Length: 268
Length: 164
Image 1: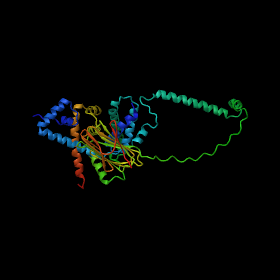
Image 2 (image 1 turned 60 degrees about the horizontal axis):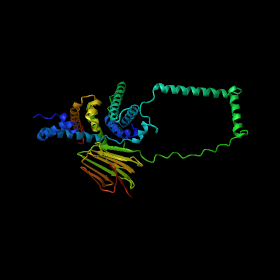
Image 3 (image 1 turned 180 degrees about the vertical axis):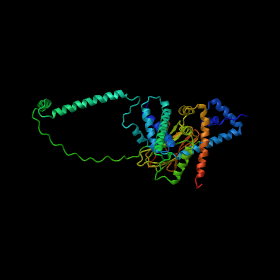
Image 4 (image 1 turned 60 degrees about the vertical axis):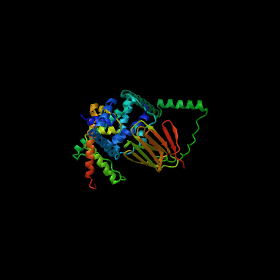
């Protein structure tokens, strides 16, 4: 019997084979204990890798990252201005500044024609608009001391994601406030994600294979669960709220549904 | 191209990939930022944005590593492998765990690291092959061997732990 190569077995494991080849490999695996053992070994190596990587993960600061990439609210997408066009604009601006500077300098010299012109224009304008000689201006009120800008009231949005482990995802949320909103969504991807916002301090995430735990007083938590995962459970403050078993989804707390999204609103 | 949608779809995955690849949160943030800024200057269809972004980010990591290597050579210092930034609140055990994973990952060739980390982010063999520059038919074999090498190296690193 010809065995299946480890590359093809890996592709089988990663769902990268065409349906016909996949069927042939599946049929071979039924009859070949050696290839089944090899497949198990490949699966175990992949699980070791995924589990080990989870130790390296930290939640990105999405709000700060977003701000750093596009500082202002206006985003220019697509090809940027050419260097030639930018240079032309800069040259025109510089020329205007030089002319204004020269005019201001001439007006400052007593007896200069520019100064006489400016004074005449000013008197004529005052006579036409006000009708009387210019009165001394009232002094401006002293500036009102303004309070310094308050510090940001909320920690930035943060989130982590993991792949299922043994076809299972567990999400545990702790220390959520009584008015927190939790939104669960079934998605097509292959990772489960938890994203939290509206927390006074950055929530603390811990991940392990197939599991995300979050502690923090976040007001808004978004959870994405891969549609393809066999088992998933979301536990909030020690109580199960959402469960997926195969294609069946159960809400274990009052929930609103809109499209593919399920919303749980915690009550005091 | 809706930038916000693209950002929320791609940034977490890119940051995770870069943090795993470099072992340095600051470097990962810097490179993710630069790659995104470059993406903004492109006019790519949505489907091509993700492989393009990861390929550019990986090249930026390589460039930075080369510059750092050159600097180290000039300073005649021992080459420093990137390690996770120590944090005061991190438990010793967690730090050691991170060091074990990084050491095992560091024993793989850069191409193998890239393949395994892209696989974790859900790239297809076709996309990985294009980014890394290998035949799509060889990706399965390369991944299987790299995973085996990692598992062996990781077990060895765990065995080196005097407490075990």
